[in-house]
Picture 1 (cartoon, rainbow over the protein chains, first blue to last red):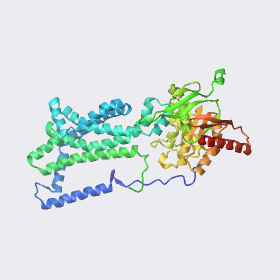
Picture 2 (cartoon, helix red, strand yellow; picture 1 turned 90 degrees about the vertical axis):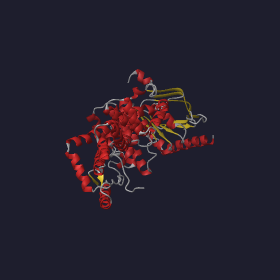
Picture 3 (tube, rainbow over the protein chains, first blue to last red; picture 1 turned 180 degrees about the vertical axis):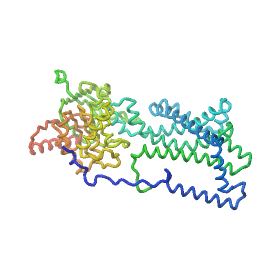
Picture 4 (tube, rainbow over the protein chains, first blue to last red; picture 1 turned 180 degrees about the horizontal axis):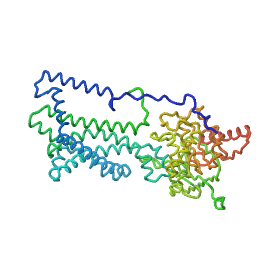
Length: 274
Length: 259
């Protein structure tokens, strides 16, 4: 016996649309825009004093120098590791805060104002506090990163949990899952898109904060190197080190986008934009 | 069948009441008042009533998703709300809308209940694939819900409810969100499928024709949910007898509206 007549009904299968073309995970439009920016910079450098706008080849040469020197590569990697460690810590702590906040209104009433209060504290204040409170450079930077990105992670995971469909929750509950199974089959897939968005948003914030933290308190890393370029009044070096950080952010964002494209492949998308 | 199981009804409502407290301090809403009935094992019961008569609340009480304000609800001799986990693997539900998890393929959606009931992976995938094939969805095992039409999604949700071999099946207007053609196609064989499984089945609907087509026993609810009319629908009823029952139901519902 076949309910519904055996095969799928004619015309029932909606058209599956094609994905937009990408270049190593980036849309072609993004690549064109970045090439355009480079071209504009090069044109401006022809008409503006060298110490203000060094040429693109000069910046490229400094960039090659950085990636040719083990010590300088170490600086770049140190900053990258600090960003990822700080984001990881904030993500774990933010999730540990968000889930009980979502489940307990009374806990939320205590936690919410504290997170809002935290949001009002400038990153530089955390730098000063960390220098006074802690001795180790790495822990100082980790602390600054966590404290500055914690509210965003918490609020985004909280919002994602709150956006969980009541219908899906009831449906899953009707099968009487254990708490662990409920988390695995419903809660985690529900909050995952929000978590990935939180990582993408916080990555940029973290890159900005880590430089401030390194400027003041570190003896290595991109922030430290930027401080050296400022003291030497070396614009090409400053731009090159900034590009190192931007390249790192773009690579991690590309990785997150690839993960997102894989884990959210179930999502439909419209052919027409609004 | 043991002596004990012979006397314990599959479902027993005793003077059940359910009142919802409105948010914002409004007057409480009484959805169910002094509702009492029993349903025997293996019965196929259609519950009929106008929108807002408490059908879905009754459904929620049987499934254990909501707690009664007064009275006692027993399913297979147990409290479905208080002894929530006792019912793992025993209840299958077909909801009004498909409620498929968008991140799971059709196969994984069908296998969900079995997965939560710890059926081994290979076995549950075989069962889920067989149910999809049975419901006309062979070849769609790896499709995500967004790639399926409304009728196909609802068939996946029907497969999900049946696949775990529940002893109690609850169906909450499962065809109401579908167009007439697709709804008819699914409805035609649904009763045979219910009978074949041998499960006790409760079918909630607001359509008289659907209730007469699917039920072996019919209960009509008035507002707040109480039984206003009840009858058996034996196999082999003539068209004239069915028309008479339908007429009586219309009278009851019209009287309920007038009241």
